[in-house]
Length: 239
Image 1 (cartoon, one colour):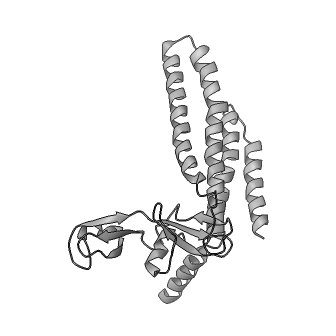
Image 2 (spheres, helix red, strand yellow):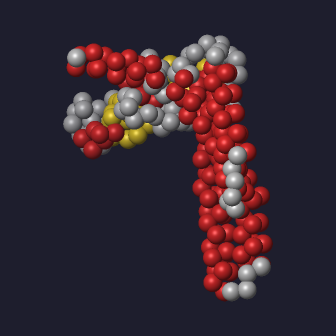
Image 3 (cartoon, one colour):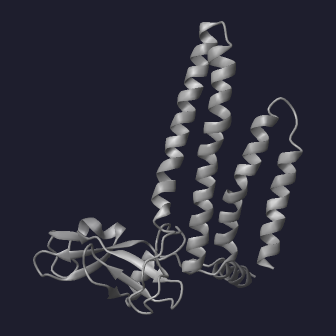
């Protein structure tokens, strides 16, 4: 059923691209094709259950989307601006516009390259410390605003306690002793495609299990089904 939805969305966007008409067809048609991975990534986040598989699929589709954006500017827009505005135009104003369009395209390519490179590390698995298979993926590459608030790990310099503190409480210091001297601990969080284990570790340190409920904020656990059930429950109470 999910595959049918993916195929239907893809066919709708392909048909829209083929039916594009007018002088801007060379721009509209590629944009519709470029919208396919963006649409599928959003759809995957909404219909797939939370877990490392959904994170991996969404990251893969976003990488394809940004790669398509870069390719679109490199192959289509920049050659068009150079040929029809920089080289063919006789007026200085048209050449200035063409030069600015080329600069804008280069900026768009750089803007698209940065998240694509950042997302690549979420696609490459490592060895899981529990099942020892190469299925361990980076987690928390996106956090939904409607889910649990993102926290970070800290250690108090005075009482030497490990703390999980919400972003809204960063400036309040240590909740144990009240002292302001706290230092962030840069944990990386992972979960396994095979055994579903959730682990964390500091740079150049050993693996540690994830057990605390506060650590759920480091994973994308938002489920559209929970959101729909919440809306239905509110509508039922209001009646």
